[in-house]
Length: 345
Figure 1 (tube, rainbow, N blue to C red):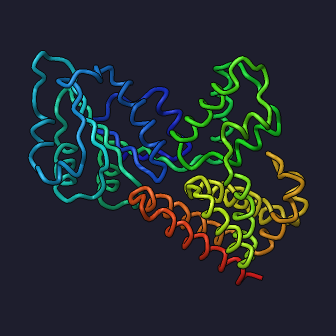
Figure 2 (tube, helix red, strand yellow; figure 1 turned 45 degrees about the vertical axis):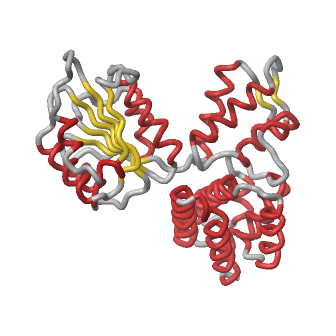
Figure 3 (cartoon, helix red, strand yellow; figure 1 turned 90 degrees about the vertical axis):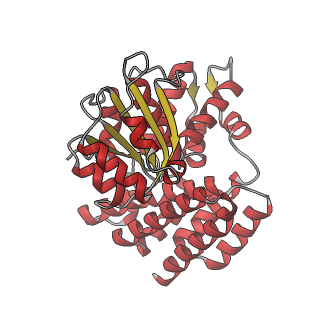
């Protein structure tokens, strides 16, 4: 059985286990799934531009052509050498799953399989089959927490040799996240915008990353975590009226609940009040928001916070599977959590 924990994946990617026949990269952060699958693909040493060596397939196509995956897996390369089969959009498609299980039982020589999937239930379906096999390994990909996001920021601007002002860093952390590829794109855009500048200021960050909706992120999220229904309705209407994309808003809500999760855990462990835990928090909570966070911590239990996080992560996945439903799905999820918070008064 080979099942990596979320915190072990980056270390594994620095030196992937070449003895595995199949790598399953899955999770709600589709950008991170794609990025990590690409790192794995490059680590195989196979020429990714050579269509004879690298075969890219969509799981939905395979579902309508059940024997193709088996044919591709056991085909010997025309000119010898290793081959890579890269499957995207996998789930629990019946025929695809059956063929992957067959390949795991009898791995072909000189062939690696990388499978990209969305969020998968532990121990069941595709994820369960790979977890139970000695020939496969699973790599989970969840939305970046504060520490992972900070590392991504450091890595990006470390490469460009640019410094960030403290206000700029805080602004960036509040307005990206939730999707690794999108976050990386925003950071690279900011680095390009500030090209030639030694230090990136708050104003530069706002000009590059911010938009009219960014200012309302806090208004929506704060009303959600404190259960202010009237404020939520007003802030959400204002946000949507500007034609804003709810995906960054969901990412901001996830980061806020991740912070609450850490603070609540410290309260439960130490027995200290919310104000003391918030005052000692690292990274620090903005002074202007401390009262709001304290109010939220007085209402939310550790279990409730994790349920809210799970709902938000499911919402992100559902909205990415059907972009046309992003707005109603996001609004419904955020409203439901706001109601939960209101009931905790």
